[in-house]
Image (tube, rainbow, N blue to C red):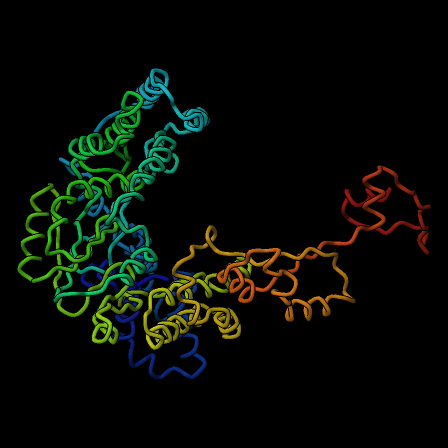
Length: 568
């Protein structure tokens, strides 16, 4: 939905906006509109909504508004409005064309980018082929992906900016270069997998919210401390590429093996980022592309090795970082200011920070000194929702399977359950999500049915297991489907005697396995019974029955020649 009337939207004094246009009409013709009948007033209200949705037909406005509305819409057309998706999934934003071009120009201006005439596709292709040809132990998967991709991608990646409407900064935006079909995309994908394995072994780098929650749950405070969070401003576009490549080469053994093969691949990716914007061609000179897959682990490891020695200070009780966002528990406020000053001097990146005595916001969590801190010296957690969060879930009217929509509802309940150490905070978060789901058209029965499967007692289980890989599965029972015995099977499963059927002398069950089997009873896998037709088809034998004649010997008349031919 368009956020009409926002600071980036069309409005007075930037000439006409859809919202401002309606206000001007109502001010000029207020007396005329107030005298309308109920039916005419309803039509006027409906026409206003259609205008805001940009679905109105300009050739059929009300007669007394014809001239002003046509002039206003003509002026809007001449301004070349651009509609972009806002950052943080905050909906669509209409932006004036000159303002949007200023956003893009802010990022592609020197010294970050330089203008070039031609995209050197053949030169990049020859460099990659030479690197693969003269290197030892090149992964076979990389060769296959490169061979299949190199002839398809012959254009530079498009560059665009998405507005940051959640921040009060002039022309605030996030630069994006869509490299999903770029010539170096397969190299970036394989190198990202290599660097991710290194990243997972580094202590202090948060993998996701689950790992951070587990780390906070294990922490017990033994002395006073303050909360500090820091953020790296414009991390990807501002990284010193030469310093970052040199840092990774000297600290990661994989980057030095096989004749520094992965280092050469990293140089090819970082030094050959060509983008097209506003009809011109540019080459990135500072920073890494935001849309390439290797950018997150590349920036993560660079900051890790740069900050590693400083973050080993004795005044730091707990430290975690997720790419460009950091979280610290420091003994005193003076130590926190001293540490952030040292970190600011290690790289060319600028860090902003916040220090608080009672709480901190990190990822989608609020870490605070709550009920448990007074008794157990442990921190409390609850889910954080940004004030601008509009809860734009998948609409219920979308053409997606119902299982996907039910999974979204259940997944939100599990996410808030993991993030909450107090049941009251969890229920409060669910009530907030319930309103957002209802606004998107989800029926209450679907929401309640999905949330019944998530219990507060299962929080430890959801914190330890990850979806897909570590989730324990119950026993599978395979049987042929029979409507007559279906209800009996359900009764058997409900009264399943685990200890009698699986005695300990035959099966060495531990307590955890028995708990899992009782919590998740066996699942029945119904198989379809074999039909006579299946045997006939598999043996390639077919019985031909004589065709039955219609009651009327005359063929049915139809205008479709294909149907007439099929019947003949």
